[in-house]
Image (tube, rainbow over all chains, first blue to last red; front, side, top):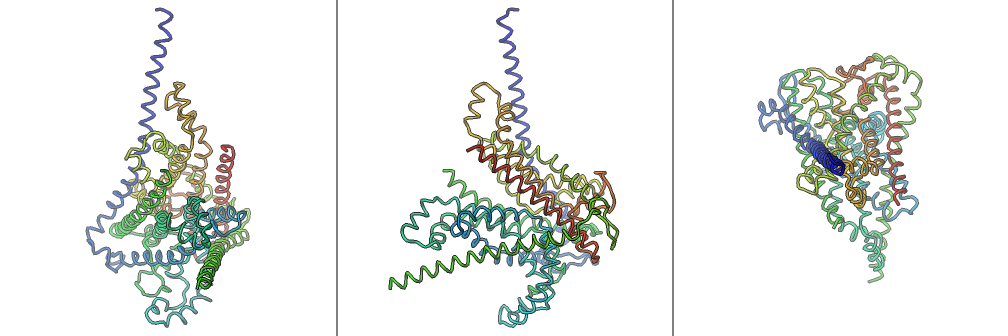
Length: 323
Length: 283
């Protein structure tokens, strides 16, 4: 063996070792990446599988049947689906304009030193657990509403033609309007911080050219900032909608857990997430449990579509920025 | 004519600005009210027993020691299961996927998981772990928390690794360092604060998660550290106690909510501080 060969062989050994380690590491991280895909797929499949008995028994009619009778083993999803859609709709009606106002305030109107602290405060509050919102709703908001606000709404708005039935009813405090309001409070920080970030991506040059032409602040926001960020703003709104549709604890506290279909927003109702949270641990028959899982599958599908749309729209802006 | 147009425009502008300010006041008003109620009610209900006694039987007073320990244990396990896989998957997205369609798909799916309703993820873990085992367990609770941790960590790791300048990779690779070593010793070292922030954000998020624990870990009135059995945890105890008719339970629920909120806010602030500090040092 000659001395000049040893380092060479040693280096070759090290090369193959490195190569092997490199390949192993690549497999490891690729495996972890694929696991993310696998989890979503497994979640979809296992929930669909868990709900198969209900879908098999009740067919597609499960979606629009109004009965929910654990004793008679008859289950239909329409009441929770309706409650989910109505509360989310109420929340969006309140939250979207408010969030837009906050984003506009934080990017164009507020004095510079105020912008960062208020922005950070709003983002921090977006992290408060939803159970706190729900508890506050039940113990603080509900009594206030039932004493001071709902009697007034019932007396004044309840008599109006057309929209009257929506606002007529006993002032219980619990109900779909309250749930929508709590949801709105929850998703405002969420939507507002996405909108703020998106507004900040608009090049200053663009805005300053508009100001130089004599535009007012409102015109800059409405005619320059908003059109150039439209898809991402809608994406942010959809993210909020996804959250409102799937939110559980905040809604469970204040919705009233009533399986009845009523036109009035002041009456208790139910939502998909609240139904599952309230009844799953007590569901004693396979069909009952399967129906609850089937409800979960409906929620999964709806939020999947909403969130996918949101991400696609947000991505469009990110791509344009990257170019 | 032009004067009236000008007045119209400036009037519109003033109205819009006032409305935007009102919207901000409106948004902050509720949030401050919620925070104030939690701090006020929670502080009033705070005493030593909260941290030394077990959850009481109906109508009696006690503490939440078993719930705090249970939550800490399950959150720790959730991070332990979720964070390493999340860091590896984030590494795959940033360093190995090379903008291939499969990488883009993983990123897209991860973004969806990130905001998927936690109750649905809980149902998934119920079907995967609880149903085959035949009973509720803390392990199932920890797995459902890990499923929530994973996308948060994947997202931040991906973003933070992509912030590392390409020159650093190229310098290391040109010295003949193999890619796995570059990743472990150069990229992770430089992106560490960011990755840590992601883990902290995930911790803040799972410490208040209630919905998925309702049918995975369930609850336990007694002291238990057996991960194969149901375990007490702060969010579910708060939920149960707040929905009960007893005043002493309500007070405990507020005290728990106080500790939980404080914890989440502090963790969030620490995470933010880490990011702010690294940003300054990068500049």
